[in-house]
Amino acid sequence: MTAIPGLQLSNRSQRASRGAISFLMQQGVENPGVLSLAAGLVDPSTLPVELAQQQLTELLGDDSRARECLQYGTTPGSEHLRQEMLPFFATLEKTTSEELGLSSDDIVLTTGSQQLLALTCDALFDPGDICLVAAPTYFVFLGALEAVGARAISVKTDGDGMCPEALNETLADLEQKGELGRVKLIYLVSYYENPSGVSLATDRRKRIVELAKEWSKSHRLMILEDAAYRELQYDGEVYPSIWSFDADRQHVIYTQTFSKSFSPGVRVGFGILPEELKKPFSDLKGNDDFGSAHLNQRLMANVLLSGQYGEHVNQVKDSYTAKRDAMLAAADKYFSDIEGVTWEHPHGGLYVWMSLPENIPTGFDSRLFEEAVQRHNVMYVPGELCFAADAVERNHMRLSYGMLPPDRIDEGMRSLADAIRVIASQI
Image 1 (cartoon, rainbow, N blue to C red):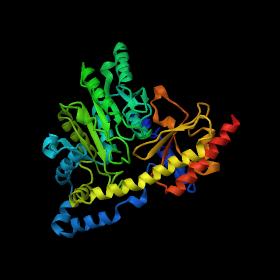
Image 2: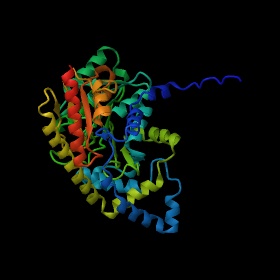
Image 3: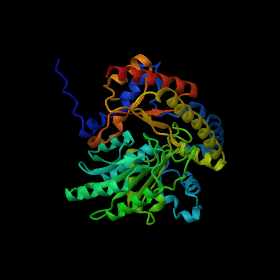
Image 4: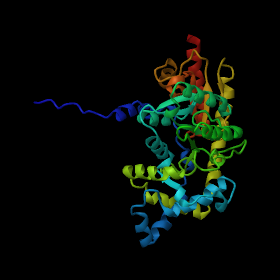
């Protein structure tokens, strides 16, 4: 029997295969009894079952409207929802729809915000181009950059987010090396960052926009503001968007999602695009799907129109506030006596960033990961996944309080502390 030749995959598919999401999911499936402090899933108890049922019943109750909702939509997305996005976004920006200065044509609806991140990579990057990122940053976006052959370069980051002085120095260094022309994008998770829980300070938001304009020499340097967690604020300062500092609306791409605040199963996100990016994004999205799920977008439009969305978000925030507080209390209880362990105290989002002594690596191949998963039945996301290749740090963990109830969070944190003590005693 003649042997069948091996399949020749594209470079892009091979680069994408190195992502960590599949491994994390595999670990969850293979270890069903493990308490997951890794999963970035939302709290099942907050999912809007009754509200979704009510609005879907209304949408599908009329035969003509039901057929419209079940038909193809347009590539930019449902005009019903794009119109509703204007007052929704104006409220976030603490202004009116009229003063916002946007029309529905400036908005594209996507399959969650992740699709807009991928579209940005496709629209802006050729292999070898550069994206400047915080250290740490959202590891799935690092995978999207790698998939298109772009290079991620880290910029110094602290408890107030990316440091503008370091950004300026990085850009100057790249200019000196003759690589400024390859820098296309600055990527920032502006609110309660995944993974660190840090928010970019207000003065830094303004300064980074100024730097993007100052360094737009041979071409325009763009900023991608990923505001996925904007609505999940539990306390602390209310931040203006980075987008609000871009007066000419030409340097900031803004994206947000309803996955965390409403439902990840609905998979509705949106982007606000500068004029020159509208057609490229639409062309690329058209090739992918010629429009995200129309029924889901109509559902979100109805939810916003119903006036019940805000009440639902408040319930979600109440739930996550209790869970965040449970994780921080457990950290104080179980980790305070472990030398060299520190953690962030986020004011929103879904994550606590924990740092261990430098001699305790946390990666998938580390003794700690094996000890935690195999013998203490608890899982975390290794922090090294969240750094660009030029500045990897191996002694951090991203801990999520999204999925588990408070008592199980406490149990998971206790188990994780026990695993760390075992490894620390062996060093």
